[in-house]
Image 1 (cartoon, helix red, strand yellow):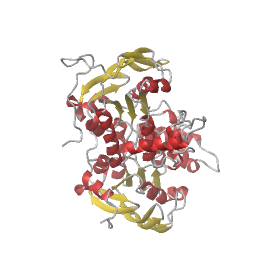
Image 2 (cartoon, rainbow, N blue to C red):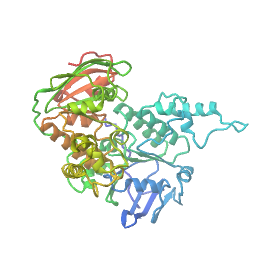
Image 3 (tube, one colour):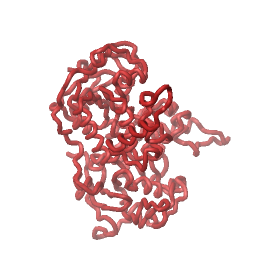
Image 4 (cartoon, one colour):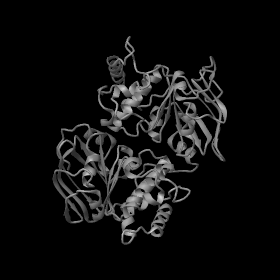
Length: 522
């Protein structure tokens, strides 16, 4: 049975089924918004039914984020109105929206790292004792209850700055659900989560729907839309394209509505892997507390996927190979030469590059230009006698923008103003400018739109075809299965299984990832 046990389709828009007319939980009516001469939303109208999961999909730049900001009181529309349970609602702030039961969990957790979990849960609304002081016992008790309701084992007294990405997301969701929520907006909620963790979130969403709560789901993962949504609304270029029940919204239709053209996603990269010489060999790599006895090899022309649960140690292995957090023992051979990874600069010089998961925090300088970000690792090589060669840098950046189809108004534009997909292309272009032989990609399509995702997949396939050896870490199982020639499964800091492309299934990968008692890796 499909995990999506779909409710009977409801009529969309202003037409209701025969009998009693159910008032929608939220009605979006004629919403428009411009910034100067740029029109970002144009006459957007659709209903979010009571006790329904409604997906909002579209490429980056389609207007989803602006619409969510309007619904939650962060931005005022130029025209149109929002009705909550049939009543016009004007939200000047997110607090006003929350007071009427509308709240959002955004893609990137917005928490205070120096506060503990309970303090973050109730910041601005701390429970008080009869003496007016903060009631920490009540705060921790209520936070603990919220996490138990989510099925999450999380200490309310834990420092938020020490939490994983998945744990940060659970804190955000628990905080959003702490009030009387009528409409919960989830913006890419599973981006940092493993499939098992995402399924726990799905259970929560289904439970909320069963309680009559409404959920607006914004996601680039169309399998999540298929699994959870009752209806879906598609935006493209700031306009409403369609709102349909999921019975009329199979994936190919959704993609075509989103991008305005046919687009193949998550199919085999379609190249015959030409496995060349061994470029990377790792033997017995160990860093106590992170990973142990890690052994594998990479060959020219192949893509090796690395799957596993959040916290399994995949990113730590990559960071050790790049010299960010050196391993304590083990052997690394790069293109036939023994190396001891000590610093990123050393490994870049030896031909190994690493694109981190946190591209905005570790991979890019958001305030700097596209040109500066692309050429930063090679600025010294392009210059002479300690002086930068701006002409050469601009030429490299201009070529990268054209080669990787980076959508920007110019190479001098701050990279922080680009969409997620284009920022990822800039990050890729930066490391590819170093001409690596081995490329490690950590969650390469995290947070990018469907069109950019397809482009990045093609880029990765083309790079492998050109002779690069690629290690791709991803929590997106369909992506791993589609792109990899071999799959290494990591659990509890060890490679517990190696699966050939033709033998790989989602079930097999997850079974290996959740049974950390296995030993060899084939």
